[in-house]
Every structure is written in structure tokens, then in C-alpha cells.
Length: 158
Image (cartoon, rainbow, N blue to C red; front, side, top):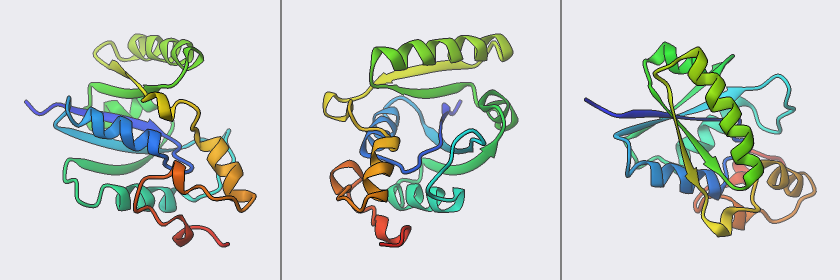
């Protein structure tokens, strides 16, 4: 039986930390669906299509990665595509507390949904999309925070 996991997020933009979690998760799962969520509570810099294309660029040579978009609850998205595993990256103890609460609620809603937590590499701990977006908006160099080969200039006016 193929082991498929969903890695959900807004990914605005997709960072080296996200990439590292996905690449490590490929050692555990046969296939990963990177699910780009539409979160009405967040103001994004990039459209869903741009974010999906960025991720597609990063994993262009990895057939075990599928990029999809979704709206609504992640647990419902997982249910709709028949996936029982959810990947979450943890940078800090605050991330753990938040993700633990969400994971437990997801379990109540879908008892067979397992949350799999991967610790980020120490060098990725301070990197998050909000900070990278702020650097981008202020015309700073984000190359150290984005996956190698991701040409952010294709997606933003400079």
C-alpha cells in the first residue's frame, strides 16, 4: 500500500525550511501532496497559482511530489483525497504547542488521520514565510531563505 502524506500550508513564499521538511519526509512516504491552502485570514503576497508554480519549480524533477490547492479545513481536504498522514514542520516549542492542539482536534474530527511532526534543521529555525515576505516587500535579498533554483523574480515585480 502506497504511503501518501499531505504537507499543508500557505507557503507565501515556499522557503528552504519547507523544502527541507519535504525532502526529509520523502524518506518516510512514497508520495507527498503539497497542499497550498487559501487562508482568508491571511493577506498573501503571491496568488495561489504563483505559490503552486514556485513549489512546482522546486520539485520539477521529483515525481513523488504533487502540488494541489484547497480551501477550507485541512482535515476535510485529507479526507477528500483519502490521505491518512499529515506532515508538519516544527521550528520552536511554540510551534509544537500550536500543532499539537491542531493535531488533536484533527484526530477528533478524523480519527485515522495521523500528524507526523518533523523538527526543522537548526539553521532553518529562524526562517518563516512572514519574515521572508517582509524582506521581499522591502526589496531585500531573500536568496539565502529560498530553495536553490527558485527564481523569485519570476513572481514579483522588482
